[in-house]
Length: 362
DNA sequence: AAGCCGTGGGA
DNA sequence: TTCCCAAGGCT
Image 1 (cartoon, protein in one colour):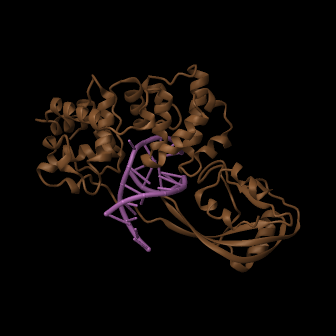
Image 2: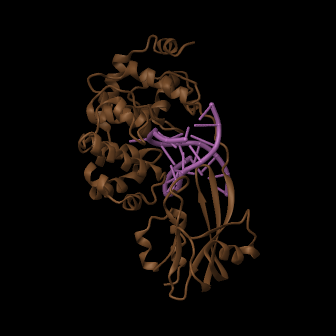
Image 3: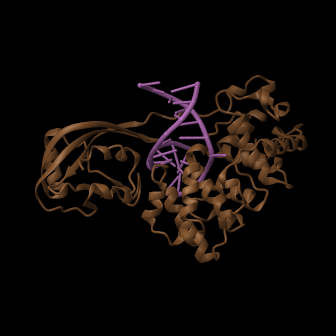
């Protein structure tokens, strides 16, 4: 069946009018007070939506407040140093979001006089702005009736309408976008979209939904048929691959610490870290030799002081933290430097390496 | 299409 | 512990 046909079929006999009214009324009564809901400033909405991608509200709040404090306008963010932006993002994860956001804001400043576009195509062409974020900005900041389909929306609507498609597939998101286009309120698309998400966050939760408190229970086919906990359908993800490393805390005779900047693309791009020995390639015995080849320094490998695990969405670093002392030689490495331990706060580190900071001798 | 991209919290 | 998840986007 074609998508348009399915949408018509799914919404056959569904009381859109009543559903909209109940949802929007509930949202206006029960919505949480959040910093990005203070006004409709498109820049604030934008920043919040980027931070909230795959990230919990409680985690985002302090980052958002600090970020808006530091970069209150598109101009301020556009002019900032990229390392400064990454530092403000430190610990939040998915760091390409920060780089893409700044690049996109710079484009808004140079191409659109600092005004966030209210046009779907212009908005969607900005780096880091995908279908969800585009719809969220258009509806929340500009009151334009566009779908903003995230995980919440797919969970809520999969239950309301009993849609059993796998929500991890892109084509399923498009199906829900089509459904939202039919359902959305033209009078208040902002409250409709946010209401759908808020309902997913507060009531229609993944494991144990509070159906008895649900403002649209009467519209919910899954509840009616007793299958609400079976939905949404989602393919299970595979296990992360484990990689063993040594993490080296290298100090010279002055007590300065060796850190290096990661590549500007890929995992933890442009962040700083302590040197890491991939144990899959290098044996424990060969560490000093390997280190001399990489950094041009002769070292004494000391004791193990900690074990740190870093869980990513697709892999796991298992790191043994080793103290290392420089004996002789001159540092010869493109992206590595010695810094005083107290200067580490100037550099953005991934969380796993922040955990190693306390082991540095001061 | 499916894999890459972080982190912390809760069951 | 292990698993899943939380307002996705890029390639």
